[in-house]
Image 1 (cartoon, rainbow, N blue to C red):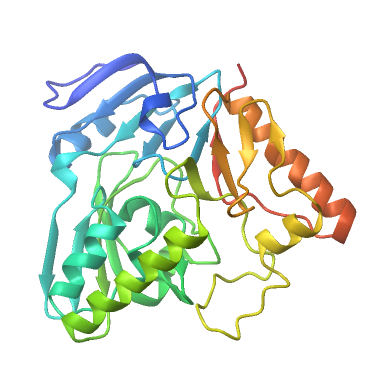
Image 2 (image 1 turned 120 degrees about the vertical axis):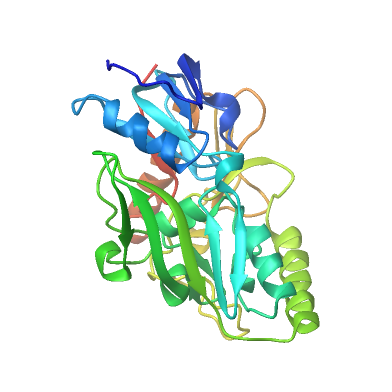
Length: 306
């Protein structure tokens, strides 16, 4: 595959990935690389053959890896990439810093990034997917990011480069984000903490947070996240059109659309990736037959069938 330099990170061949995802499914990657730091990642990227696919992976919170695994090098960032630094209203976070930790640290410093508190996953995935809720998105607070290219160069990325849209961005294939800088409005730390506590209580009351899920399964057809307001319109929310199609609680094998929140797909214990994906496609078909709405996956699905 490549003539490897003296890497300081960990390279593991044929690494099964199921335990690295929230849904606990997935076959092996050809290689899993866990870089020690940015310089180590740059060395690695320079050495990887151009015809070998590189897939950056965060904490696997929004991911189905198919049962046959990935014919690729998976790059997974760990402790060397979870720093959080705050200067004024700007928060710079490593790609592996959890969204919830960033929100909490920012609030303590009087910076309002509270919408991140209930978003599963880490900052790298949040940037890649333009994560959002309560009417706020990464695009609203994004200043810049740093990424390592396939050639091993460390480059700065602007919002214009990423071309943020609802639940997506245009990061070039194989590039690995290593850090992002966000800027939020100021706020009183106590008020921000209280708001986050309220958000958590609301989330726990309405979402299956104790089950194996990957957050929202499908994008909202309306093209925006919940605004959190009492007058928020629900007729074009994914959960509503799934309910209307009679698919709340639907099952395929060990996969189920949650009874608590019908846009959350859960692994009840023994689901395969195929169970999860087949259930999702069954839901999409039923919703389309019922309403003419074609739901789009929010969970990323990658790899080969088993």
